[in-house]
Amino acid sequence: MAAEAHKLEIFRGLIKFKSNTQKIWGVLIFLSLVTAIEVALGIFKPEILLVEVLGMKALNWIFIILTVVKAYYITWDFMHMRDETASLRRMVVWTSVFLIAYLVFILLQEGGYIEQVFRRGFVKSDF
Image (tube, rainbow, N blue to C red):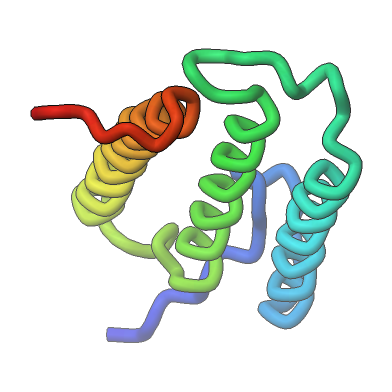
C-alpha cells in the first residue's frame, strides 16, 4: 500500500502549490502576516477596537480569534490534520473548541472578579 501524497493547497484549495517546500513557505508567510497584524494591533491599539464587546475589549477578542486561526493552520498544515480521517479531525476540533470556550469563560469570570477587587481597594470577597 503506497503512502498518499500530502495535499498541496491551502485555504480549502484557493491557493495551490507545486511542491511541499512551496506550501511550507506559503503557510509560513500566512502565519507571519497574521502575527504581524497581531503585533501591529498590540503596538498601536486603535481606539475603535477598545470598546467593550461581550465582557471584553474588541481588541482582545481579535487577539483570541487570530491566535485560534494560527493554531488551526499550524495543526491543519504542519501536523497534517487535513490528511486524517473525518472522525479524528472532528474529535480534535470539537475538543479544541470546547477547551477554548471554557478558557475564555474562565478568563472573563476571573478577570471580572480581579477588576472588582482592585476597584474596591483590595478587599477580598467572602465565599
